[in-house]
Amino acid sequence: MSLECLIDASQLKVDTSFGEHNFDDAVQEQAGLVAHYGTLHAKAEKQAALKKLALEALEAKIDQEVREKAVMDGTKISEAMVDKAIKRDPRYVRASMVLIEAREVESLSKVAMRALADKRDMLIQTGSDRRKEMDGTLRIMAREANDERSKALRERALSIAAGKSDLG
Image (cartoon, rainbow, N blue to C red; front, side, top):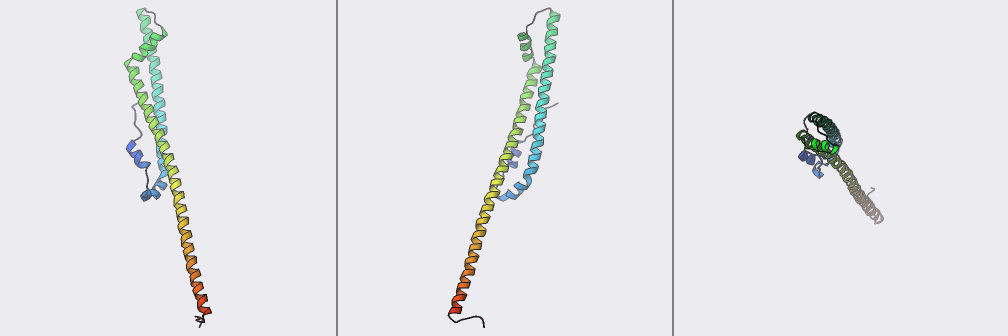
């Protein structure tokens, strides 16, 4: 099984960014992005677990090979010597490096999930700020309309009081 780099850092940056110009689109796309990156995160976890399992199986195989060779050569071998022989084996070194890379991909997928959670929080805050701003604007518009209505009523009352009734 080859190692699959699941997270594209530059695409993640695009997917976790938003501004005033694309706020509504960002809100609509958020759930889909969480599902997409959540799936990639699950794949990354599986990939790392499989690489760990492969490394452990290889370690057991090399252990057996080292012990069998020692028996065939008629040499006594300690656990420490077996352990060192395993860790020096090029197959073990390669498999260990692949596991390290798989864990890196897994870590990147965790970063992606955290970034999307942060984006969600920012979207919520931005939406809240927009609502507050809209409430303020509506209050000002209502106050201005009320002031205009009061002014018109006051002018009409003054006009009536001055005998300039517009009733007829």
